[in-house]
Length: 111
Image (cartoon, rainbow, N blue to C red; front, top):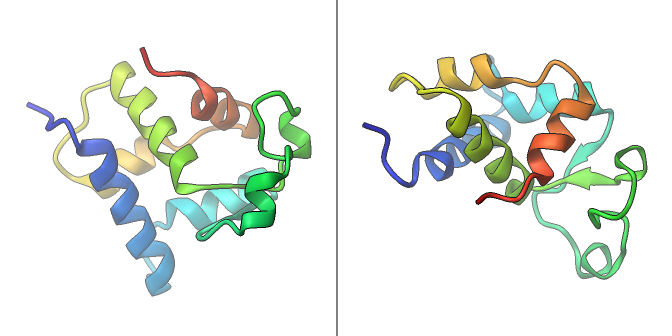
């Protein structure tokens, strides 16, 4: 059975991989390459005041993605499949094929 905080565990794992410069699969770095935008590890107050990351703005105008986007994306993927206990394998299996797929699932409101 999957714990309620599995998406949080996945995002924490992603952040550790990203910050450590690990040579194993780095979901965030691979997502930066796929989307051609930067991961905003600590969004500044200017970015939070800007509408650039509003859901009303087209995805091709986004300036970055955050841990919150990653959490929503992973949580939505959990609705589609049952992960095994290996977080790294699960993250590789849910990596989006396109930038559009990531944004669609990262914005989808959880119900």
